[in-house]
Image (cartoon, rainbow, N blue to C red):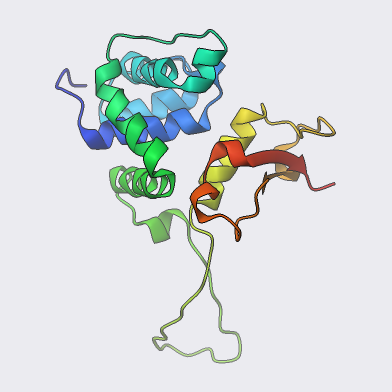
Length: 188
């Protein structure tokens, strides 16, 4: 574990985790916090403190009267400001950096399996596939916001929950990954 200054990449992957965890789970004993701390070579306590720094600059928590940890805010404020101004880029970048820490590519971390059943022979094909990048990250943020419960029925089975867009994905590019444009609903 290191006492060195935090790098931009470390702050970004901690921010990635902040977007995925409910406020009550920013604790050093949370398994996701422990796993990230081990991955980036920081202590569980250090990662927990940075998560709580993000809570301090989060307007949602400020409106609720929750202040988080104010020491260390200067380190996270720049990352927060970058997220607010360009959410899609930073979510993508945070997942890429996280994959780098795991010694994986994004393709390995989020595999898209394509089988060509009719032509089972070894050859290379170039394929263009249009997919919604970062949809799983958006889902994690929305489920966190709604405490893993459907906003209408209260169903809390994660396998039945989806993150829906209030303003449709196709209609507003700037709001695609904005958690305030999402609602947690059940498939039922």
